[in-house]
Each structure stands twice: as structure tokens, then as C-alpha cells.
Amino acid sequence: METQTTKFLIIGGGPGGYVAAIRAGQLGIATTLVEGEQLGGTCLNIGCIPSKALIHAADAFHQASSFAGKTPLGIQVDVPRIDVAQTVRWKDSVVRRLTGGVAALLKKNGVNVIKGWARVVDGKTVEVVPSGSGAASEPLRITCEHLLLATGSTEVALPGIPLGGRVISSTQALSPTAIPKRLLVVGAGYIGLELGIVYRKLGAEVTVVEALERILPLYDDELVKPVSASLRKLGVQLHLGCKVQGLNVAGDAVRILDTQGKESELSADQVLVAIGRTPRTQGWGLESLLLDMNGRAVKVDDQCRTSMRNVWAIGDLTGEPMLAHRAMAQGDMVAEIIAGHKHRFAPNAIAAVCFTDPEIVAAGLSPQQAEHAGLDCIHASFPFAANGRAMTLEASDGFVRVVARRDNHLIVGWQAVGVGVSELSTAFSQSLEMGACLEDIAGTIHAHPTLGEAVHEAALRALGRALHI
Image (cartoon, rainbow, N blue to C red; front, side, top):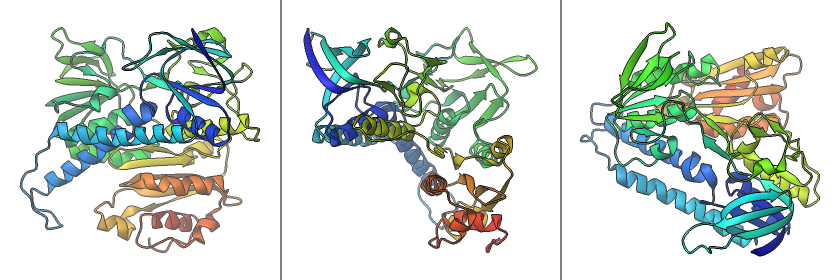
């Protein structure tokens, strides 16, 4: 068996792993990255990027369809049609450009990329079985000084409804060969609703089943309300507080149980299971390390160190929040620590975005979370109905909300719901990381006309100085 030696060995080429590798290369650390499938991991290949590409295509088609009737804008078109195969090819081309860019950056920074499946032998040794076309048949042994685990997460299966046939996961949902007439989505979290809305806009009849009594349980009621209204407007059917029992005997319907214990069937041509993700801990030898765990996740400290010396873990493998930008920041930090820099992972906030229609973004504490934390806070919202740019975009639903301490006006949280508000996440995160107060935002000139003016006005309103409401 061939043996290689490296200082820094990374298992997993997703956002966390490849960022750690690029940064390590920039810092002059001999680095090897092992990835069994495609560089970019879930995010670039079967998650963030392809889903947002389909969301854009579905939005464009839905808007074009609305132009087939009379519109306030005066635009009239014939009834549009969509070539789903071409849409998927375009989505795949976006993914290829991004993954190709990652490969080029790794090469530029001297990272040794090995395509293969890694299995941990011990904290210093990994065996790799090559994968892909033309791969060598002999496994490779790699020894290292520092081992970084960045294996990501996998989709959670639903007992009683195994994947296969008409039952699909979000991965299959991102590469449709055709749009089903009736799609049933199991799970009303962000993945289920994002894809459910895509399929509805592309013409499917969509039904969503959720065991909890509400959609998007990670966000408060005020933020979720505009999304619920949009779902009703789109014609998406919701069955909340209902538990999925499995498929019927014929396999063409899903059996559900409501809160009163009454069972019924919902017909579906396709069933999308989207009930969440779990750390990828199986199939690559993690158990051999005997690391401390937090449930299903690997336990790490504020430098992403595991319980074994010089073994590190980042991203989804370490549990919630399972966000690509969190993994990237952790990977960058680990590389710098190995290079001798002083660093720790202690962000004031990590923004979370839900790309539904409308979008939701949250960073820091909501009013309810601040209260539960024992903080005496004030909060204020500014509606997009009073924002000029939102009106010109026909996007006046939603608002921006700020949460700040009552005593010194230190901002502890931002939330927004509306069209395009994901782009406000940068301003939210920056103000929280820089320790901004309401007066800092109120005293900053915001460009007009922009959606960002709602950020300014929310701060002004919290100070009792709102200008446009």
C-alpha cells in the first residue's frame, strides 16, 4: 500500500473543508484534501446553490405566467411554457462553474486533492479508496500531523416511507425530469417549503404535511405570517399537526394522522421527504477515534478541537446551526490556528436565511429570545409598505425589525421578511459583530431608494425618531 505524509489532512471537500484547505495553502501548510464525490459538498452540488438556481427559475416562470393576464405594469405575453430539462441543464452548469472554480483555487494554493473515500485508522492515519473514472484500485495510506473532519451531513430518512419510486429526497427534487401533477412534501421547515414553493410555481399541486402545529418553527410568528399568506395565495395546501403514517397499500397516497387521531389519505404522484439533516458520522471510521459527542454531533471547543489532540471537526458534523457560512468560518479559523495564529470561534451572531417567498433572515436575538435570556430590550419594525424601493418592486409585504438593549441601545438582533431580504444579512451581521448601537445605524446615511433604508428606519423608530411612518 502506497503511503503519503502531510501536515494537514482534511476529510471532506464541502464549504468548510475546501476553505480550510485554501487558507492552509495560503499560509504555507502542506495540505491534502480527500473528497469521495464532488468538491463543494452538499452546498454547491445538492443544496444551497442548485436550490437557489431552481428558486430563481421558478420565480421567473411564475412572473412570466402572471404576465399572461392584465398586470399593473402593463406587460402582456402569451402563456409561457417551461423546458424543465433545459432548466436543470442550466442549474447544473452553474454548479459546474462553481465546483470548477473551487478546484482551480485549491490547485493554485498547492493543495493535494485526492478523489476517494477516506476511512480513519487513528488520529494520525487515514486510508483512502480511490473513486471516480480511472481511479487506481489500490488503497492509499496517508499520515498526518493534524486531521480535520469535515464530512458534513446527510438527509434524515422517514420511517415507513423509504426512498425510491415516487418517494424522493431533496437531492432528487433538485434534478426533476418532469414536474409531477401532485407533489406531497413531508416537512414544513425551510428545505420543504423552499422546494414546495418551487414546484408550485412550476405548475404542481403542492400539499405540505408537518407534525408540528406551525410552519418554519425556527422563526417567530410575526416573521412567518407573510410566508403563510404567500402559501395561501399560491394555493399550497397545509396539513399542520399531522403525523405521516406511511404510504397506502397501492403506494399512491400518504396516510396521515391528525391531532384528533383521525386517519386520512392524501393522494400524490410524488412524495418529497424533507424533515431535516443529521451529521454524517457513519461509514468512514469515526467510531475508531472514540471522540466525545454531543448526541449525534462531534463535540468541539471554541477552536473546533475535538477531545483528541490535533484532531479537529467543523461544519455540520459538529451539529447546529448547519450553515455553510458557519463551516467556512470554522475552516478558515482551524487553518490559522495550525499556522500558529491566535483565534477562537466566538461570533456574536450567525445569520440564517430562509429562501421562501418571501424570504426570511434572522441574526442574533428575536424579542422573545431576548426576553428569555433575561435582557430588558426594546424592538421596532419598519414595514416595506412604507419603503419606496419595495413599492417599485411590487414587494411591499414584510418588514425589518431591530432588537436592542433598553439601557445602552446595543443592538442584539435583527430580523426581516420580504422579497430579497437575504441581502440584508450582511448589514445585520456586521452591525452585531461591530457592537453597533441604534444611534450608529440611525447616524449612517443609507442610499435611497433601497430596501436597506428599512434598516435605517427600524433603528430610527426604536429611538422614537421614525421619519417615514
